[in-house]
Length: 181
Ligand SMILES: CC(C)(COP(=O)(O)OP(=O)(O)OC[C@H]1O[C@@H](n2cnc3c(N)ncnc32)[C@H](O)[C@@H]1OP(=O)(O)O)[C@@H](O)C(=O)NCCC(=O)NCCS
Figure 1 (cartoon, rainbow, N blue to C red):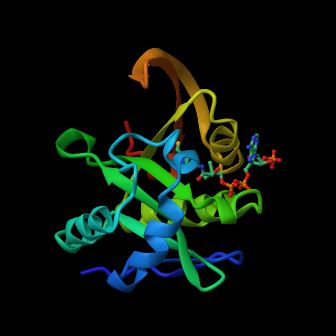
Figure 2: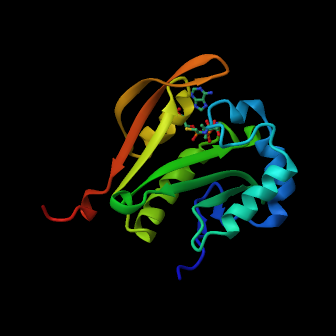
């Protein structure tokens, strides 16, 4: 089995979630500004029960798909990859968030730059997808600075709070892992 991922990326650390992160998780995640552009799989309001359900989910995985982003000694955000299955097992979908106290310091960019190659090597992934609501300029920039390419825009992909959302589709392919065709 793989050893748990633990990466010092300079501005912080990516390491496994632990139950003692509960208070920090709820404090940073429970914000409408954080939830605004995440999928509704990210609960809002973010309660202690939601945090416990999250830890239960991760503890059920042999090799967890999501990690805490620790900044200034506390878990201030999260990052993970939902891995594909069967013929999609070579790819995954990247997601991340940070509490507002950590915004605007280059932390998400640095975390994504560190996490992506580590997880692609760990799981032997050839491709990552990331989907961003088009108004989420900061997240689009994070992906672009981490080497993701805008592959298209899915118009009217979701309706949330009565508002139609377009979703930008980003992709990153590690061509060094491409099998010979
Ligand atoms: C998106 C998010 C992760 C960005 O985190 P961050 O650490 O503040 O991002 P960075 O500091 O690395 O900044 C990345 C880029 O976005 C820009 N940026 C940051 N906040 C911005 C804003 N509000 N509007 C426009 N651009 C912004 C930065 O200037 C930087 O670009 P630059 O280098 O060209 O100047 C954070 O805002 C967040 O968690 N938001 C809520 C959850 C979310 O949207 N998750 C992603 C879902 S796809």
